[in-house]
Length: 290
Ligand SMILES: Nc1nc2c(c(=O)[nH]1)N[C@@H](CN(C=O)c1ccc(C(=O)N[C@@H](CCC(=O)O)C(=O)O)cc1)CN2
Image (cartoon, rainbow, N blue to C red; front, side, top):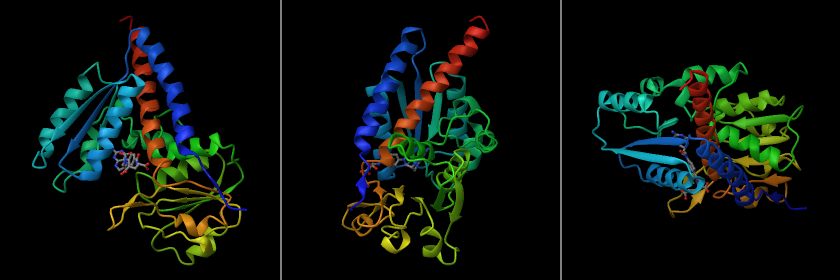
């Protein structure tokens, strides 16, 4: 039987409808969630993602502002903007679109974002909190993947999950969130010997390696859930995932399409994190008698 194609559009639209209701309720009680997005330079893909974030905020009733800075912006200027946004009570979430130009240290910039406003979960304090199971915003793409698995009722606890990729944005936090859900987790990367042998043991296979169509049927255990986080622009201009979708269709049990599933879910979690950051802000205000 061919794999079930996970309907990202349906999952995303029902999740966003729930978020919109909660945004309306919080706004009516006096706090409209607010997100600041900062982009430096002209990277065309980043421009698309930032536009999508602003549009998604608008649709959800979240206030948003996009700060577009020229590529020659200095690190000091960027840090100054972040400090202003940290102090701005209208803004509950801040994100700096990655990648940044080479002359700016992403690490330094992320560390400047207030821990309470770090809706990407890139700040070392939040990364640490997630890893020890403390309250923190969840990293957007990995949390989106967990939500997709939950929405299609795939059990995670006790399953063998294999993550291909060890980036700080996806691979490592993905492994951490799967572990938090009690999966047995293996991380594979460019130095992994016998990749196929390991990935074929996966009940849940997450591809986040950044290589178009790397995962083929020989990597997939029959019936496995295959989640494709990859977003590779081909020479033809078409977008391709890390999974060879057509090739795995007859082997996998479930597979996510690219585009149309993990990407939009990433933005949905960003909305959820912004809402949550605004809620916590309102609670702190109330506790302080403001
Ligand atoms: N500060 C951040 N930077 C980056 C992140 C991040 O989570 N925070 N992740 C990626 C880019 N990204 C979010 O910013 C992102 C990428 C893609 C999509 C998406 O919806 N993709 C669509 C296809 C869009 C297209 O046609 O190009 C899809 O999959 O359907 C959302 C978010 C790196 N930087």
